[in-house]
Image 1 (cartoon, rainbow, N blue to C red):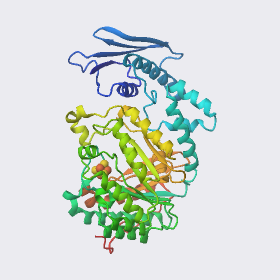
Image 2 (image 1 turned 45 degrees about the vertical axis):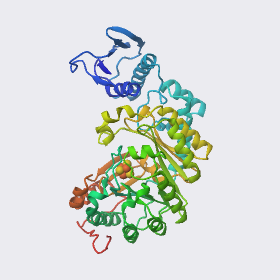
Image 3 (image 1 turned 90 degrees about the horizontal axis):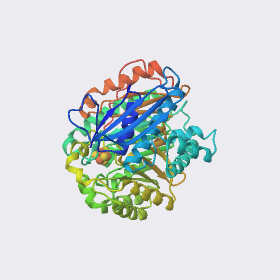
Image 4 (image 1 turned 30 degrees about the horizontal axis):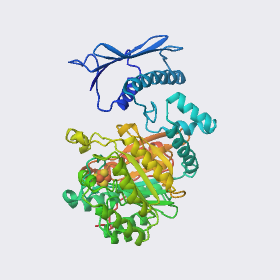
Length: 510
Ligand code: SF4
C-alpha cells in the first residue's frame, strides 16, 4: 500500500509516520512532491492556530475526518510541556483515525519510543497505581494489559536500580564477535567461525590490549557486573575461554563483581568441557538461547542445530553446575503461528530456566531477513500479539516476573522485548544497559561504551569499530578514543597519561 502524506509545517512528522507505520507496517510513505503516481491513501494534516484536522482519503473519497480544537496552536520556543501536550493531541487524533479505518488498536497506544515503562516509572513517586493506569489509558491510549506489565516492571526496576551505585561503580562488557553461522535476523557484530576462524587468535590478542587498558582505567576498582556477549563467546574453545577469563581476572579486580554472565547462546557452540570451563572460571549466569523449539523454524532462520541439542546443552550445563540459566525466545519468527509458540513453551517448561527473555522479532536494516524480505513475504508470522500473550501467561503461570522491558524500531506489531525472571534471578547488567543508569565500559569489536553522569542524568557514548579486521588493526586507536574521552570528561576512571602503557602482551590466549 502506498500512502501520500500531506503534512503542514512538518511538525512531528517523524512521530506521525512511526504511528502510521505501526498501523500499516507494509505501507510505503511518500511526500506529495515525491509521488510520481497515485497513492492508495492520502493522509492530510491541517494544523492551524486554534485547531488540527486529520483526514484520510481513498481515491478522493473521505474515509475519516476529524477536527480537534487546540488551546495554543503550534507551540514554539522552549516550552517543553506545551510542545508535548500539542504533540500528544496530534498523535491521539491520528490514532483515533487510523484505529477507525483499519479496525485495529495498538497495545501500547500511540507510544512508539524505546522505553515506554519510563513514563510509568516517573509517575510512581507522585501517583497511585490507579491514577497511573488512568493517565496511561487517557493520555496514550495504552491497553490495560500493557499498563499492568509496565507497573510491575517499573516497581521491580526501582528496587534493582537502587543497587547500581552509579557514582562509584561501572559494569564491563566484552564482545566476542564469532558465531557458528549467521542467523537470518541477525544485525549484531557477528562473523561465522568457518570463514573467520583464523582471526580468532589475533582478535583475542587485540582484545587483551583493550582489557589491559580497562584494568588501568579501573585502577583497582572492581566492576559491579561483567557481561561477555557477542556474537557467541562459546564459539571459543574451552582453553581459549579459560585463558581469556583467567587473563581478565588477573588484571581486573573481580572481588566486588556481583554478576558475571556469559552468552552461551548457540547450543551448536557448546560442549561439557566449555560449560565446565565457564563454571570453574566463576561465571555465575549463562544464557542458552533456543529462540524457538520448532525445528522447521530453526532450519529456516539459519541456526544449524536441533531442538534436541538445546535440551542436551541445558542438561550438560546443569551437570556442570550452572544454576542460573537464561533462555531467549523470539516471538514472530518467520513462518510461526501461536501453535509454534505453544510447542516451544511446552518444551521449555521441563528445562526450567531461572530467567526467560522474550523478544519480538525486529526487522533490522542490515539483517538478511530484511535484505531478502521479498523472499520471505509469504512466510510472515501470524498473530504475533496472541503469541506475546501466550508467553506472558506462561511466564506468570511458571513463577517468572517481568523486570525489564524495551522496544526497538520495526518490531512486529509495535510490541516489545521483556525480561522475565524468578525473583532474585534478574540480570543487573540488563537493567544497567537498558535503563542507561550506570557506566558500561564496552570492549571488543562493536563495543559501545556508555558513560553515565548521574548528577546531570546524562549519557555519552564512545564507539568501537564494528568490523573485525578494523578492530584488530586499529585497537590502539579504540583505546586512545576512550582515553581521550575519559581524561576530558570523567573522574571515575584514571587512564594513565603515558600512552601505550597497556600492553596486553605476555599472555598466551590461543
Ligand atoms: S547467534 Fe546471535 S549474534 Fe550470532 S548470528 Fe545468531 S543472532 Fe547473530
